[in-house]
Length: 289
Image 1 (cartoon, rainbow, N blue to C red):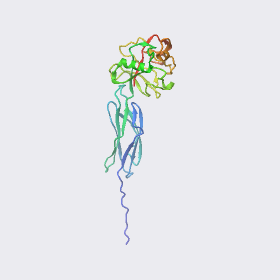
Image 2 (cartoon, rainbow, N blue to C red):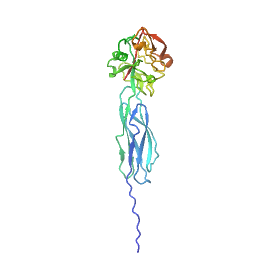
Image 3 (tube, helix red, strand yellow):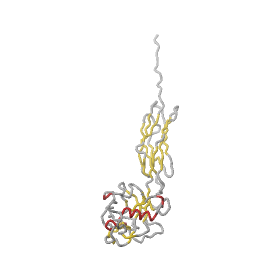
């Protein structure tokens, strides 16, 4: 008599899950696509679920803005996820860190989870203010104009906000990215907010593009209870080009320079087209580094 035999039941391993990040550094407010990959080593006919967790790290965290997977899940599945560093109402609060983790669950199996998928969210707010003091356009005579104007800014605020200040001004060795980008003082894709003395959050003034060029329209850079009585020494054209019209590199009073209107909020009202006499007095626009 021949005995019949049956194949043993297939033994399936429990599933596992992994998370891989395309980028682990985000600018505040920036969206970044992340790839969540489930690796299933088990019965493709049994359902499982995946849960995504994100942190809420103060002062701002990561927001799970979309998770794309069907329910229930079966078999190996790739899932696209978006994480966003949330805006913090233009407050200079510093960088923050968060995480994105995933947990996979199937009946009869232990939880499979991954951790330490850390993302740093960079605070992209920086302060800007108009120096309340005024000086003539040739005030840097005999000095390095970058050093003179940066010190001028620092003298107006000292240790205000405990940050370093530099002057947004065109010199022979400080050029906008349009003119070469030498010793440029602005950062790409940042928000510049009014410092307003010791407040952590200030009114928005302008944003920069990917080249670190200010974008119009502007907000009001003039602080509360202040009325600047002089134009801003600048030296840039309306296209943010270094023109050389800058009081002979801020050395000579017997010359002219391009200036800006402190309360100007668009291209037509911010840039003053007629060059100013360098014997006159003006102020300066100071930005955080």
